[in-house]
Image (cartoon, rainbow over all chains, first blue to last red):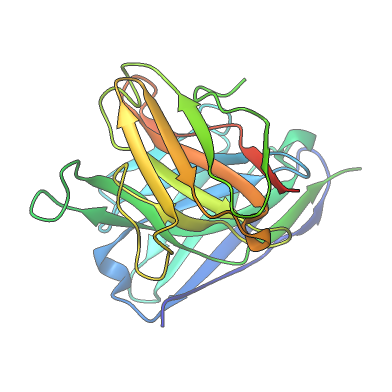
Amino acid sequence: EVQLVESGGGLVKPGGSLRLSCAASGFSFSSYTMNWVRQAPGMGLEWVASISSSSSYVYSADSVKGRFTISRDNAKKSLYLQMNSLRGEDTAVYYCAREGNCGTTSCLEPGDFFDYWGQGTLVTVSS
Amino acid sequence: QSVLIQPPSASGTPGQRVTISCSGSSSNIGGNPVNWYQQLPGTAPKLLIYSSNQRPSGVPDRFSGSKSGTSASLAISGLQSEDEADYYCATWDDRLNGWMFGGGTKLTVL
């Protein structure tokens, strides 16, 4: 069974730092691109960052570029999000999500998608 | 303001068919498949439709997806009370180089 378990959330002051972790199990972690997606209270989903299976490719949203860093440790089957210079607008539940793929042999319109999500960890930025 | 535009709300009675639209542009929906996620109250999102019209195993065939040009739609037939949730469309944006989500549609079963 695929499981993603986030941890590391909590209350932090503006300008502070926090490191989130996502422990993966039940699948070959090193074979998948992984993502962080967040959801502010009462708001919609916002993609934060992606990292390819071997860490060769990293993408992040403009809203966090230069402040957040996504990384992974395939030996530990873990995904991380280092968050620096935190702001009030970063207050959200942060989800890690596995990126699945449907290729040309199976899909008329091949592409990627978030097929498994963790339960989320709440980050609150407030003085 | 989200890059992908969804109606904020939709509603229907049990047994009805409801559709939720998702409007984008050539850099996102126009060139990439669309995925749909269902988020029940207080829970993490769940993949509902991938590659515009594919259902993961376990998702009832009452749910279907389609795409035409720069717009996509999610249809739910035989509406049930347990379908009451928030629904999000999502796709990759080639110009912004990132994943984009719609603002979400809150579905109410009357």
